[in-house]
Length: 192
Image (tube, helix red, strand yellow):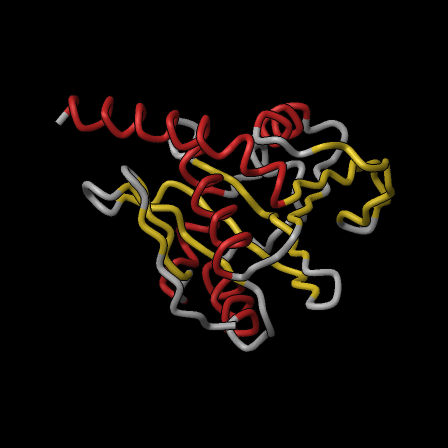
């Protein structure tokens, strides 16, 4: 869905993905770094076509993470599978440049969008069990493992762990994540 939600933090912002981001998507999702994600077609034309279809789909919020000081694209993040009955949404497709410091602030922005703007009661994700860095990252934000499930990835079934973060639990972790984000912004500002 083409949306107009723009989120601004201390050092980073999230803006809606556009057709012009096709080349960046290919760059940031290089095969080794995105090995825990579904494969993408690695041509600008194929990515533009995928984005055209995405922009017509319902209730998927796809963002480019940008550094505010120079609008350098740092990564991608999505909210998808919004469930109005369950009041839940999936956080997925998070990938950042290897040198990016945007992880904490991206989490704060995405989770506050989910809990405060979209008014969901829980956010969930299914990282692959082999993706230990992502699991450690989301657990540091308060996500709790609910169950191990099989996930289809490029025609194969792989083990994933369904992790869930409730709105109440996020309140316990939000202050710490926001403090980390503010500290990173201060560090980046002092480098200018």
